[in-house]
Image 1 (cartoon, rainbow, N blue to C red):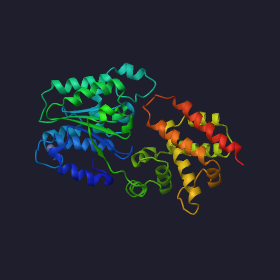
Image 2 (cartoon, protein in one colour):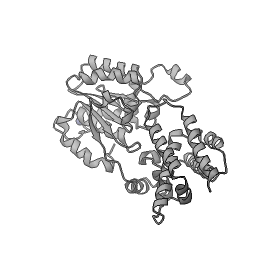
Image 3 (spheres, rainbow, N blue to C red):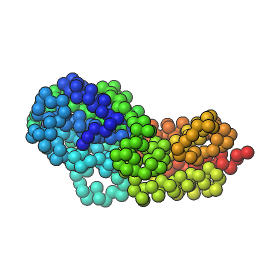
Image 4 (cartoon, helix red, strand yellow):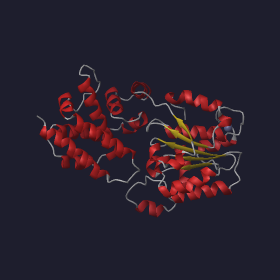
Length: 350
Ligand SMILES: [Zn+2]
């Protein structure tokens, strides 16, 4: 797959440095900006048999297997949740380390969003045992922040004692969720994130997404690839229902409980990101009333001035929540708490 325009400069630099790529890398960027694809392309380049090529040649045996998703030296570790958003080439590779017990997989009611110690044990065994087709073996982990503590500890040993020709590519949009011991053993590459204007242009010109939809979802903190996934009638209706619910909550027309129950159907993390971005936009608008925004603000400048401190505290609380390890706090309970604080502002306004 082609490299996204906002990653082009760094991709060229990776191509130039292909012979000095560190054996453990932490590749960081904003979610929804095509991170797994960049990790895969880097893996493809390192695996290509044409040794002096600065990109996958697409013609050798290795490149053929890579494209079909069956390269024996590419070990992709992921979660069911993340797999669903990746391309076929990624999914075919990651299937090897997915929950092999299909009955167990079908019986579960939730989609697994963590990487388990069994997955890491299986991959480290495979890396140690197999001779390998070429001179390189790659272990690509995305999203690396989904490693649970046991899995991270199991991985640590391999990062500490890398065998020649083995590369660990850890790809993450929330690196603060990784244990410091893992982070300190990797060379970090911070990828460029697209600006709002770049994202909107890419969505509307290349993918013909409606301008208003693109503006609203990018404003609410989604990455361009997340917007593409959201761009179905059903999802957009759910997003609009969330905006309507938030508007009613802030104007005091529905209770915090009703809002939290209603938006609980929608992705809670996304709900919190929308609330966070609306608080920030409301506060900004109150400081710069003449600043024009393409998407109308939900929190009026009056409300933002009157409840400045309360809104800031909710804003930072959401930021802290989003940086905590997954499932360490009850998401629904946290959303209710946020809704209560916003409802309090609405009810006590002068
Ligand atoms: Zn090749």
